[in-house]
Amino acid sequence: MAFTTLSIVKKHLLSGVVAGLRIADHVVQLNGTDEVELPHHGLIEKSEAVKWISELKPTREGPVQLTGTDWVNLNYGFLVPNTVVLSLSDALTTLYTEEVDFQTDVTEGRIRRVETGEIPDLQPVFAFYLHYRRFESDADYIIDYTAGTLRRASGSAIPDGAHLFVDYETIAGSVTDELILQAIDDVQDRIVRALAQGYSGSSSDHGLQTGATELVLAVLARAMANEQLARRLITDSAERAREWQKMTDALEAQGWRILRPFLDPYLLHSPEKVSHA
Image (cartoon, rainbow, N blue to C red; front, top):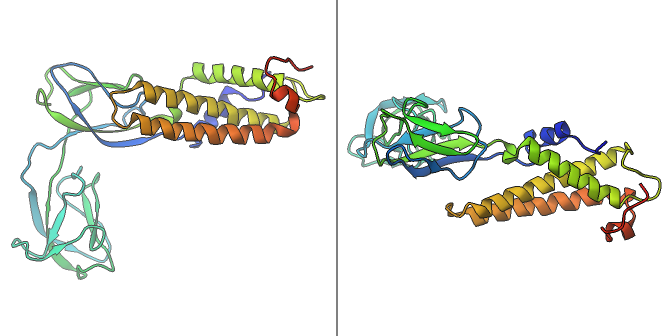
């Protein structure tokens, strides 16, 4: 019996030890019905938003009255980040600064005053902004959540060759059960080879479970680092790989530190020697 289990490891993955990612505004170009590869696979179903800036002329809305710090809905959601401008009038002679005078919720399409800012309470303002058009799954695009690919659907409203912005979330760790089970077997073998007198592969000490789980998570993080290095079409793949490797090193160090009381130091550094377990 292994010191840790599939369910224990997956519980840690879902709790954010090896966290999933939230990606916003990744740019892709869809030509014909050709598939394009996103930076990740193992996406959370229905987490995506496929968007297009269909109008480059800012939308004008107002006057909009801002009361206290209450959110006020604009006519459109999915605002383009950093394009929202608030003005006292159409003349644009008095402009307010985002995060200093007002805040935006770009997904929901909302604005509100910052209490310490320059916009007086109950002051009507005019809003100018760009917004995305959002497309529908299956009708406009086909997404493969497991493989992390995207393409235009037949009869799509997405213009051929359009540059789109894609948001999505990844499953924590983006790892399969098969990979987890293989990692558990490998870690179990490493630990059993180094166990001190009095411990065996059937020992049930909680520290063995905790240490083994940390080492399995380290193996999974290393796999993610290697995957990022293999995805060379992504410009920041090397940086992402370094982050996964840092997580690998931290998890591995923590795992062996927890396991130290159960191990024979000589056997630990002599992997070719099999312990008495």
